[in-house]
Image 1 (tube, rainbow, N blue to C red):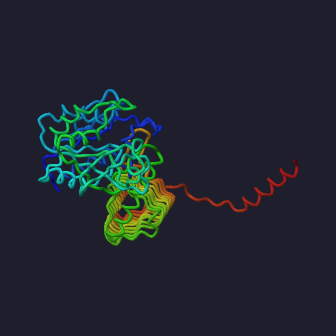
Image 2 (image 1 turned 60 degrees about the vertical axis):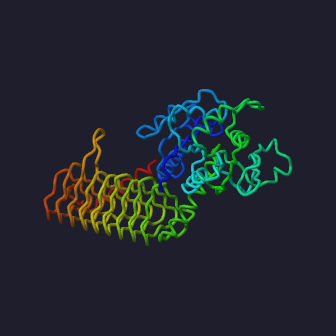
Amino acid sequence: MNQGNFSVVILAAGQGTRMRSDTHKVLHPIAGKPMLMHLLDTVESLGVERRVVVVGKGREQIEKALEGHDVATAVQAEQKGTGHAVAMAADALAGFEGAVVVLFGDVPFVQPDTIAAMIERLNAADDPGVVVLASEPADGKAYGRVILESGDRIAKMVEYKDANEEERACKLTNSGMLAAKASDLFGWLTRVGNANAAGEYYLPDVVMIAKADGRNPVAIVGDEYETTGVNSRAELAHLELEWQRRRREEALDGGATLIDPESVWFSADTKLGRDCTIEPHVVFGPGVEIADGAVIRAFSHIEGAKIATGCEVGPFARLRPGAVMERGSKIGNFVEMKKAVLGEGAKANHLTYLGDADVGAKANIGAGTITCNYDGFFKYKTTVGAGAFIGSNSALVAPVRIGDGAIVGAGSVITKDIEADELAVARGEQRGMKGWAHRFRVTQMKKKEDK
């Protein structure tokens, strides 16, 4: 989808005091991604030409988050209202003559189709001048109302506190987002006054200014979800819940099985294959790819991992960034992987840590085995060859290489490389002292009686 010749102004200069946070409001994440980045990804999918984020208090945080992105910033040094904020973007859009879509950094889920529809309506033959994004929420609360005349034309926009009973009964509310041609928008903004109780310059005023100029501003109606903003921790949590609900439905529609959908939590970039099964209470962090037919058992936490066809994970497993499971491999209960590859058909079934490791095909890692990959200063790699068998409760002290088909005896601490098909046992020799246990108990009981 490419609309061409449109730019966006994203307002992110608000103080966000109700969040009670040192983190800027628009950088609070939903599904592991900051709200602002959700919005930027959406407009990027439409082929946006220029992107301007209007910043104010906490601008340093936003500017740092935008490093490496083709995004300009404009500074609203004083909080003088949304109209004033948009006007600050004029220099960044100098020379641009196309449509400008004004969005809010704390309203992250405006859909691509909706933005496209706004631009298409703006460019229609009747040249409406302004397209307002409205919605019909279940509870209109104290939102401004959009009063229509014939069709989609706006007769009046009124703040709730200024509306009469008939106007308050109108279900169509103003989201604050709109689209207009650059020259029109910035021209009208110079005529917006601040003769109101707050002494601020309100962006919606351009709608009635346009109407006074003989244009016919219109409204299109978006879903309540895409016009929902975040002003508090509670609202952030509620929007996260709705995002997760929609993502679960998407996963089910895509051919995944979720045993208990409401207990599964996705990240924004989680990729699921067909016929994979996700058991209850699974959490996906960023960067997870799961191929067809994989099974993720209950209470597992997975992030930054790639899981191939036919793999099985968990229950109670943790896969950290850099974990790669090749076809048909298995991670069992209470196993952790980090920056490690588990080869095709390999298994680590119980109570194991694999960090900075490369495990060959069909190798078996016994219960309680750990790779000792860190000396307090540097990380080192462990390599386990194809078909190798690592006995339970072994410690592989990296850097170390276990050859193909080698066997490590249970309880061994391996500090040297092991050749292919070699048996390695590294533990103290077992001794038996006949009668010692009986004599010990007798001695100790006598000491206890004497006390």
